[in-house]
Image (tube, rainbow, N blue to C red; front, side, top):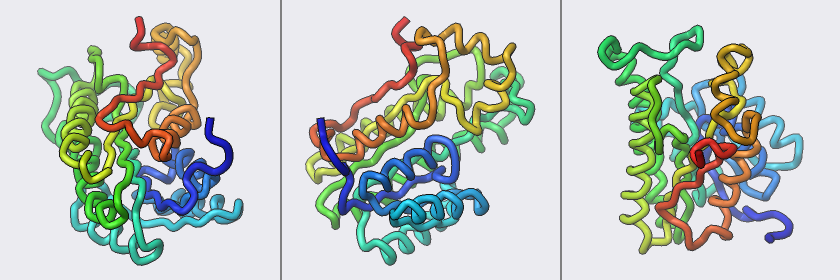
Length: 260
């Protein structure tokens, strides 16, 4: 087992870094010595996470980034390179659920609308594509790197709910394998992470409601929801050199849900 800081002298960029899994990962990466660029559309919470990291002695910056917009990726990556000079880790954690505002599932396929489908795919799939695309050149310059794409258990199995979400997360899974194969010889690793039911801002409207939470708990053999730190710890492993011979893989962190 590694002892001490596991990401010293590395630079990480994290989309969706203002809250949930992204914010937890940002703080954990910084604790392990990485300089962290937090990218998000939440211009209130993002700088607060930066402040917390800096107060703890770490190095961080915030950049506004809509992950579905390619021009914003160009601008954000230029800021990161200017400030930190390199990029070693890209964590694509930004995502949307596609659920209705009250937390209920999106309509079934026959009643779904194209606008919702396109929005979910733009953030969850296209955003990961662009994050991977714009990480390649700085990682090539750095001699390699680790790209970590947050998918979901619903990138592996399906359910009767939210077809657009499942499709987008399945896209992340197989896209990560293709990118991994393309860049393995350049020491650029690409892996996907598949969380189960985790307490986060995205799931709060469901998990705070006992009736809605109960079926999810019943599907989870360990009997409780995961926490963002549970996923961040897996991302830390993939970001570190401990996983240097690991690419194109799926890291499932789901309390046992997909085991039964």
